Image (tube, rainbow, N blue to C red; front, top):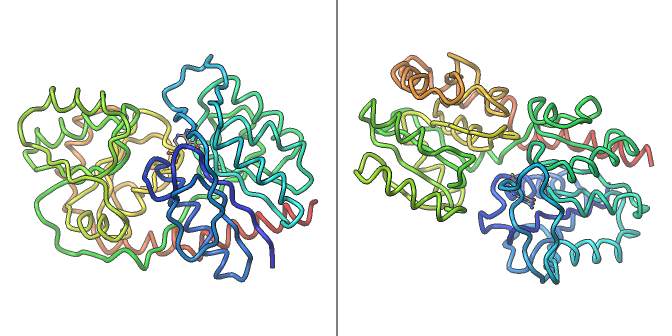
Length: 354
Ligand code: HBI
């Protein structure tokens, strides 16, 4: 039995959707490790919503999301940083734990790693973003090999230390997702509404095939969303809003396909697995995480990145996909049991090494 301390992302409370995929990963992992008999404590910004797992809420100023930064952006910490406060807490209690797992994609947890005695495992939730951040991750990777966890090879390859990354995939609580065999005539797009997700491409493709697009997710970049609304005034798309997992899967399952149009290297792409779990084929740019999840022509289509016509071809062929194959792939590779197996093995290696 391991005593595990999970340090959350500082961009907002767990359950708010600000943290995108990493919120889901943290909560799924905490519950699965609990099921496996380990003791888990989550440290997260105040007003986090965490069920079945004990959570230490920390006050302070949220961290700005890092993905809009230029490569030469300096490291920024706001006054009364919640990230700093979370790690102050970790420093006070580290002796009570066998392993600390960091879920923040931020400079500070890496910089602090050598000052902690309890080993720290880093689950890296994005691809390389700024030089100053890469520098500190690289130093930790060299000094503590095997502590840098990534979701996919594509994500690992964006870092200078990709040869010593631990590739862990990801996983979901599939019991929350119901298989749907007969969809309505609509397409889905799911994700944080922000420039790096290139929602405009999905809207363009849905207009060409004349199939309505349903958009699910949190608007995390208001200016970008206004631009979309101005550029595409007519109703070929419907913004459904941000839903919790139970509501999302019910609506997503009723779609003919999920369109994934990432402009950036998606570290993983939880939404691809959520769609597969509901029997929904995924039509994705062959880039980043989704390219390692979708089985081309079996559970969806991988198309040339940034090619609207590629998306259109995929949509026109989507009825050739057997939706049951999608659910089966999710069960085989992305269940919580499969996720727990991979992470538990990693954790024991790190605790033994110590
Ligand atoms: N930005 N500064 C910062 N820290 C994070 O942990 C972070 C982020 N942006 C996005 C994000 N995490 C999550 O959406 C990941 O799932 C990508």
